[in-house]
Length: 243
Length: 268
Image 1 (cartoon, helix red, strand yellow):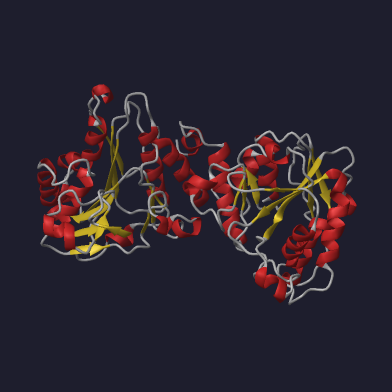
Image 2: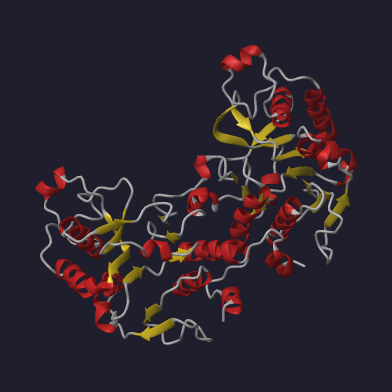
């Protein structure tokens, strides 16, 4: 999925650099792409369930491997994202923290609330924040990632569940930083809030949050990638494949 | 069980190729899902769909009116072609004859849909009533008020071959008469009228057999429509949008493998 994401960013003319952190020993690209760096990280081998939580925590741990000097903004994207159009406009503007509030969600509910006490949750109007798409002004990057990690590994108000996302939600609620809220059509989630093709086809960035079924995601993203970048009205690829 | 036939119609205005390409994708999907009958494509493309002919697939070129004649005449001609071409089908060679709109793709084998003792098989669109303007232009006044039925989609149906020409004749007869309401979807409404009046056994394909993701919210989600046997991109969207949408369903079904072989060839 990371390969799809990187290719989609390149094909939509993302004008920045891309870094992929992976624990695969094989490179994503046999032919290296300009502006793309692959960084191998060694991971532990806990059981599947713990590994998921562990893998999520790399979102903020990765800061130790990333020199953001010289950049304006740093955008973390889950590997199950695909750019259908240039994401450059998403990173423009004078703000410090860009996040995606899940439409119609409530921060006090299950997927976001493990760092929110019950009394606070009851009256909280804030939406839950998705943990898979986070942009930060580079000069604030370390500070935000440290805060995210501190909340994530700090005391929780209830049993830990989607802890990285819940920690980010807590951070966004509390932070005085200037925020940019991503919303459709900038960002859509076909497996969660935007199931209709006419909605997500029109977005800049698609994020496959909402299912844990890897095979379903991969198949979907394959079809979406081909119809975004290999489709033309003459259906050339199909004519080649089906002479 | 005898041999079955699927036929489709792909008519484009001069110079356009959208429906031709849709039909090619449909035929390819039927072959890839191992449909064990014959396939006939009626089209007006100057070139064949397949440069290398497929076994069991026949392409029949038909003449069409000039698209410039206006007033939607070309579209009406194209819609009515699903029954007007029937005279070119030799029903005696088949057990069942199925029509599929060319903006469809088979994700799974359709043979089971053609089994059973029935004369006509139809697909009722979940949650859509027959009184809607897509289906109800030929309803009698009492039916328009009180008939409780779902509207039938005329883009996917099948008829037992001995009844094929009788069914088509009745459909054409209904459509030739002025509807009770002007401006509604005449061809599909006539189809609904014909099935309502059909005295023989009518089989309803289950809701899971055909998905209509572009016009029916019940099937809008990816996981919803990819469980169906057939995805039918019915709806008001343009032909190129339909083609693009179905291309993702087609490629996700037939060009995908977990090692992403095609992607890794295309994007080394």
